[in-house]
Length: 200
Image (tube, rainbow, N blue to C red):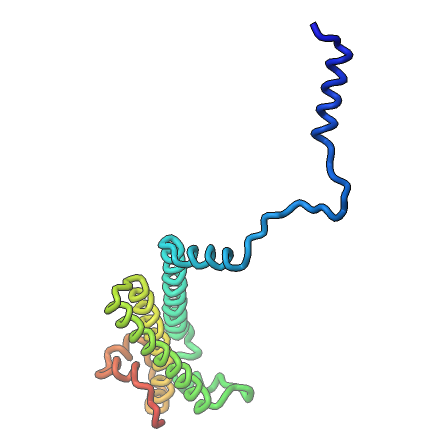
């Protein structure tokens, strides 16, 4: 049987060997530092992975759907306000509520027309991109572009409704302001919605 003193000395020497570290400042331990090429390769593989593409497509679809829902909510809220607020039921009553700080009607109509033109421009680009994605077989991109084009159409409809109210209001100042339902019942309302009125 070994001497307990010798066994303890052996364990101390072994621990000392394990804990021995270099004190030379010029001797450094190499670190694992991947180069920029490896990092770019990892980023490229991540971006091209089907899971990453599906995640980005879902985020785009969610943003488009939420934006469309907010636009529809604004249209319904404006229509409900006109129905339940008797002060702005007619064009004459609406004009009576204007103050000196209110923008001129021509400037309001021109601002609505400018926003409508921008929406139509983005909508046309989205339709073209959707057709190109359909021909190339990229169904997710085609669906996203189609939904974005629908959102642009809703924005154009919202501002064309405002322009129509400003145009038809002076003709019948004591009649209730035209609603979205009345505008859709007009002949050619769709073509009026997508018309940019470039020469106005």
